[in-house]
Image 1 (spheres, rainbow, N blue to C red):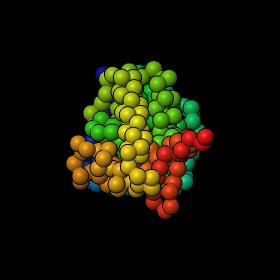
Image 2 (spheres, rainbow, N blue to C red):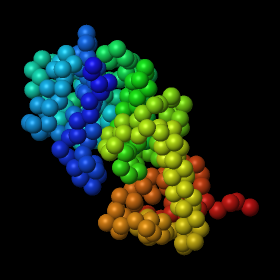
Image 3 (cartoon, rainbow, N blue to C red):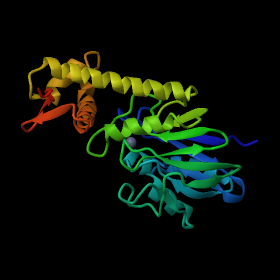
Image 4 (cartoon, protein in one colour):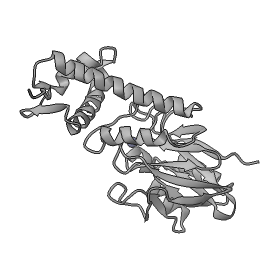
Length: 271
Ligand SMILES: [Zn+2]
């Protein structure tokens, strides 16, 4: 019997991708195979994807979670290798210019005996889609959820306000297993999502507290070491994106304001 999906680790490990990108091959039978996130243009890796696709009736469709290079880097090469015109599906061409088909929120696609549903989950990037295998209740979460560390929400593409809404949206989905874009699969899906929300809320509290203590107009590089006390300074640049993303969310909510070019402060309650 065939496994529901096959996870193939792309050969692109880095500080941002952890062990590399998880590429998924699934489906089979009448409609052929689906590949999610062909990550890199690497001959041996593409051969593996194609061979796995063959076992499932050949690759017919390529799905992209979002337009970051480590999720689309192999899409064009894979399509070229397959010869026949294999459509690339993504949220929109603004996010993934090489997409053939733009996928609407809630759109479904046959995947072997199951159905794959696209769920628009912006936040990590504006064009982020998660793919939910309905009968098996498996969520291919792209960079919404990470199996290794908390994922990066970096402005301007990333938006913490949207991200929190997307996490809350996933709380309404009955998920048995999360297959993230990076790192190991997650069995306690809703625990993990709740943990993510709690983690972000804690960071938000820390940011508000830091702004309370530091002088008005304090900058992000001044805030980061105060918030990420136990984090390797090498990661402070990444942390700065996250702080900025939180500040933009808090600004949208009317809790913080900009002071001059780069400064931030709490909005003072009006008397
Ligand atoms: Zn990404």
